[in-house]
Image (cartoon, rainbow over all chains, first blue to last red; front, side, top):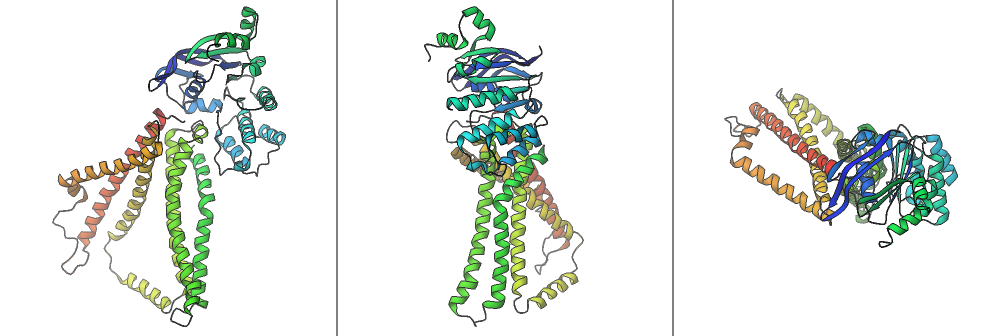
Length: 234
Length: 281
């Protein structure tokens, strides 16, 4: 399989704090990868660097052969761990914006998801509840046929029913040629869909293995292995 | 990408200022009508009528212009700060657009906002007077244009006018880019970024003043602007001379170039920070 993401000796510090330390990672196309680690382990920092929202202190990143920039932003669909909607916009404005900027955005798919969510295009975004805004953000991100989906904590802070909705939306809408990188510390909810797992601890990758291999090797689940490895931190 | 970015920046601008612009124009027409038909300024109306239908609406219109100017300044700062360095930055900086395109879009939108607000203020004034038609206004207007046509203006005059407009535009753009550069510098701080941005703005002003002072004392500004030459700007009677206008044209040309250079420095500083030191919270 083609290498889609490559991080070589990647480090990022914030003052004295080293958020990422000499990370080496290679991800192929067409995989669902769990970026797993406790809070503060460097998951969001890594995703921000892949996105070009942060510059590494050392090392380099290549997405589909390019350093993060305009070219990589065309092929990455990113769900941040916070709301990013401009307050003045309506639902239809956001759909127009995604349609204007991303050639791989599928308006029909977005309209279908809007209907499923009961979202009227004329609604002002500021009138939507926090939960609906999060779902709308996911809807926009998953309406793209991207090469790389970077989903930062998509199921954190939501109830089990919403988690199920979110995971179902991701699985039924992602482009199968693309790679999905899901960062989370809620392993149990994502384990069933993962092809690979990457464990991050204090900015370092301590494990990168296929889920099948983990199960075969340990005789247990990824969640169990995670709990064993991070017991002291959890 | 610049066009697409501007489409959304202009829309957000229009949503905020569209109603204000319409209100200013409508109010000026109402005041004009009120002056023409209801309020007798020459003394026929009672003090209360004059106040309620003449003075009060005029005060509101004046207040609206002040509010428009203040809101425009807040809008310029807020759209850059919130739009590119707040939570919205997670959306904007992951769009396939360069940092330069983002700054240009915000800057051009700010410039358009300033120009349209200025034109609305001008239109309001013209409408007020046109609707009111004070005594002798029509005759005065005709006389003004007749005198203007009779004036023998030097050939350099239109050029000076064009330069004046260009200087106004590049100065406004440079001022906006100065605000952006200060906000971007404030973004480099770990905490209290808004406060650091304010300090950076003051600091930039001080540095520019020092540079200007050094330029004046070294004679550089004098040479650049063409002052100090043997040309006289005014005759002994106090009239503007042709050579004086020529000198003004040269001075404004130098000022335009200086503003462009200063604006470019702010643009590239801001772009560098957004590209290399972006750190959204």
